[in-house]
Image (tube, rainbow, N blue to C red; front, side, top):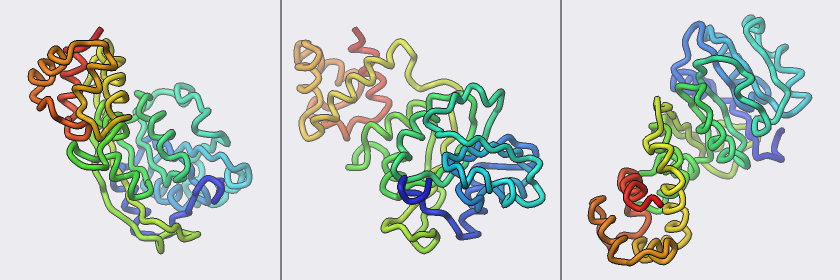
Length: 259
């Protein structure tokens, strides 16, 4: 995998222990580790008593991982595969905890795939800091957008801690942060409303400097007054721009404007 996917190997012992703690890993837990690399996080996970399934794309790194695992190697399974191509259902029943120092270049697609899988409970994932801030962003700022909505739909999320470039080899040019996600038992938007939820949000955020009501009325072919009434019912000003609309209001708009 290495640098070609933006992989920077975490070496800081306190940070490694922090990921194990943030993921809530304890003895006997089933842990899915994404992108173990040279095994710096794998060993602390095994030392915590977990049963670890590590997904590693790089052939050489995958082959070397059991030899780097230490005494807990008997509780390690290595799958030499691209996580984005992996059939997560084949992993078997969980619940799984998830941990990983994600390659920056594919961190968002990995997160989206994870969110659609119902086999996990808690995930502690390392991102580039600016991406982590977008993962947990509340409404009202420039970081808030479709990524935050996709996370909020299926999980609660917050930042556990941040790290500078010196915690990694090779040193990245950016800061990093670990986000903790806790999967919800069911999505915050019913399945029948989700297509409308995404159509509204994606349409509005493509023109995030404009008032969302006007953009949506045009896209939906609806009267502006009808859309503004839906905004009022959702507790949102007709003049609101997309980043000013909280998740709950997007959900309410999806109910009102569902076709």
